[in-house]
Length: 177
Image (cartoon, rainbow, N blue to C red):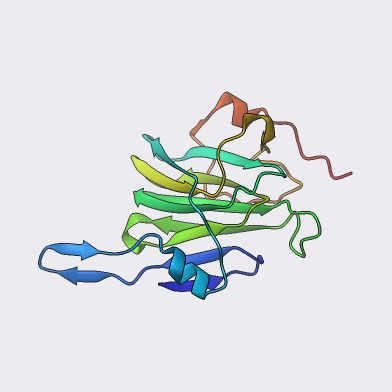
């Protein structure tokens, strides 16, 4: 597995070694030992799957605030998505900055998102399926969301969402104070 850190400390792209033969492909989507050898620790507590029927479906921006240690690994199983990671960690050099990464089932990459960051994605095609491996269990009392179109974040989405939940569309704007 090739592990590459982005400009945002703790945010990594994971690219598997793909074994291809007449039967098709085989690749490892998660390996605690390989992450450990790269100095990273991740324990899966929960797995979630998001099935998105329409292109331009928006989900996010969501996170669990501390004391949750909700790191996550996102993998697009089918289709493609424009994934945005927003750094909300206190004391981080990239606090309130974001990184946008396009991932598709065909490129086989995953994104390791550090705890304290909010994530959101916009599907780029119909029937996009995203698999999440979660580093902490869901705790509704720690769950929070942020507006995908908040000018404080300056996120340049590739398209206006065609489908967005009422909840995601009505989160309050971020308080910069």
